[in-house]
Image 1: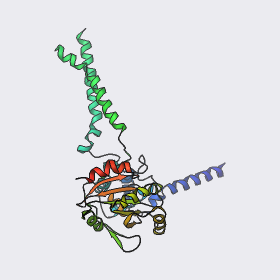
Image 2 (image 1 turned 30 degrees about the horizontal axis):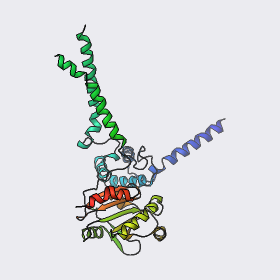
Image 3 (image 1 turned 180 degrees about the horizontal axis):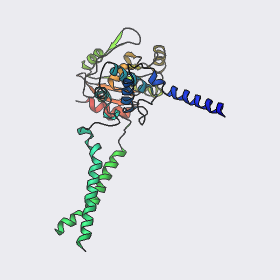
Image 4 (image 1 turned 90 degrees about the vertical axis):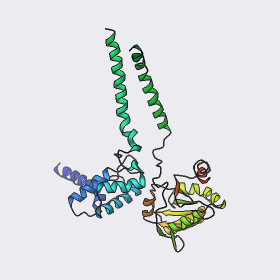
Length: 133
Length: 179
């Protein structure tokens, strides 16, 4: 029983380290740098498999962009600079959190606007009900 | 005061119509087809080896577009890309009409690319070998095939992601080439 469990755990760890393999092909000067790398990648959309982020996607373009992000990070660029670099080439869609910009105002504020309109409608209806009491 | 209350009655209806219009519009948008960030900008400078010999660089594209014809196409393709083979017949038609077409061979093997051109046709005045896809990133390429329309000032007028057909040519490219 113990041997079976150990075997199972060994396979699990082997799989997990394979999953980490893509992060491992890059060398980092510190754990912080590695975390920064993974964090930036997890906020970027894979344009081929559009619901995946660059960290988990294995699409060729994703791997190329990963390399590019690594190069930018290694040359000292900040997260904002890396994001701007990619947005310059691929647009706001590459960010999972698009920046607040006249072109994305509708995206950011329409839900709140609809909520206010809806609340206004309810309020008006409730007030109308009260007036007849 | 009575008129004010009457007005409120229409609010839910208005919100419904507004929401309906927005969602209706949304049915016809294609989120997978990204608009190019490079439209309106000059071609990013690049220098690549040419498929046969020598070099292919952005100035060649620029000078061809500026010449008498006024326009040039940059077609991103690869021998491993099925859709690229499908559009090649149309590319040959365009080339026969005198439209200058240049190729960007994306993440491919030179030998495979040469064989592919012999099989499917070669409409290109020159083909740049972008083996690692670095130039493609500068152009904001995210798939193959893609076709860029370059105007007389060297500016990118349009980028079509996907198969180039006669319908798409008529709908998106020709209007940009008039006037």
